[in-house]
Length: 225
Image (cartoon, rainbow, N blue to C red; front, side):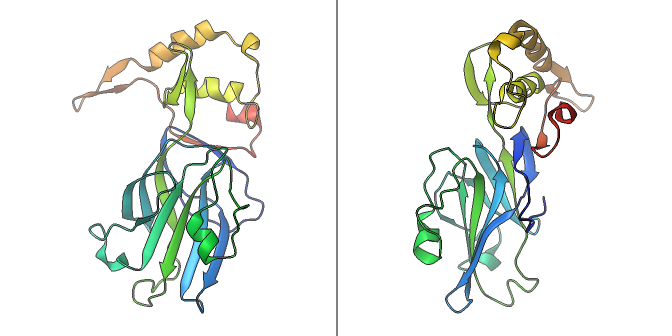
């Protein structure tokens, strides 16, 4: 969950619900260095939700919509009121460039980051608010939508069998297996087992098997499996 400046950072796949950060792919100081704009990647694919955004482990905004510019929630941390804004882009293959980045920085309409989910943050310099420098940006996200052969639908799920099936079928970053090579009946059986409710000693239930984590696409597929 630490953002990094790394020109060789590999893309990642997010399954389930995780807190994550990523590579800084753009940073620009404008207005005599008063305003700082930067973009931090979350995943190398489209995600389904951004539940919370953090500055240095403090929640500054909840429930961001895709590509909607929203001021940092002053009720969460009033110190950032008028000093910071965040925008979520969920990473669709046809997403447009951020209009505020285009109008305020060196970004152009060609810088669309298609297929990359990211958070754009704009900060206004204040030595009291940002006494420790640029805050680390991280987010709690819900990862990619996965195919469910039981219903022939594609939607968010952290069902372990469905996440594994998605990686097997993924021709961009995963194994790239064809449907003819996959025993779908076995995955239906496994998905049903994963969805079984298990009673907790503390009360309530949870699903038997889930996957909530990150796949580094720089890792060999066999190691990922």
